[in-house]
Length: 396
Image (cartoon, rainbow, N blue to C red; front, side):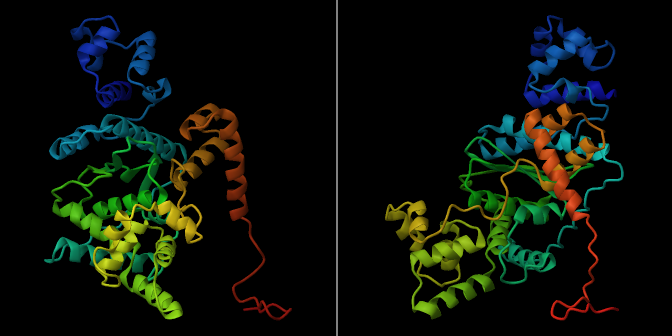
């Protein structure tokens, strides 16, 4: 099928518009519109402009020569119907679809570029979802070089290098994130920017759990979890807990604090939570889970009525950034966009639209990134064997 026709059909479905409504917008009969979507009748330029406006997409996107990415909307909508929630779903799905479409467009523009190959799914063992999640989290941390105790300083960048594409944008506040494995692209996650950094970080880790457990499924996670939690959700939650807050590291940090002062107070726990880039609630519940504090400690803190922000401020902790950027696009996407722009494969106007900035901001951003990328390619006349103590350098 003609890519233009494929894109028109995909855009209409993503916008949730029926053939009858689109035909009425173009002031034509439904059979005529159907003939157009079948490629029997040619789409006129003025009709293309009207449809782009109706479908809330750009004319350039509709006219791309490549086929659109696999439609993820029906699968996600089916998941929503099962869960009985639909807050902002259509808008979120449309955003994720556009981001993936733009990513594929850039990948095709930059010659010789290939996305990382995602790791295989872990082989399921005959144990509970929670135990299997702990095992997978431990294995992932070791493979990524974080061992049994270190915090994951930049979760988003770490997963980008694993071939997991994390986008961040404003969604309905009830939505935490979407996840989908898309053919010819890979696994992608869309996280809600409206949530605080520790919450976004938890969502990313949770969705990565889905990637390891059931990546072929597509789904939505909400800020307020479901009452009935299926096996894949239990796995994803347990994975996020062990991945972000490794038991060995949390115990060591807690015991070191206790040995210094003979006690561990709320301020100390705030600092431990900040060290691992998680919320105070997540850390207190983890400490309860490890039997390091008494049960219902978090309930006591919550019932006290004191705001977490006030507790963090009293502990001398600045506003959390959790070590991760809130930039809409992953770093690899931005590098591709800059490379396509500097090579002349796309115009400045296209570049600006692809990174969601105005032309002046885009040009400034592109120049700064180009300088950074150029500096990373500088060759220094230094070897790993060169001494930093003696004036004469070692020679192999």
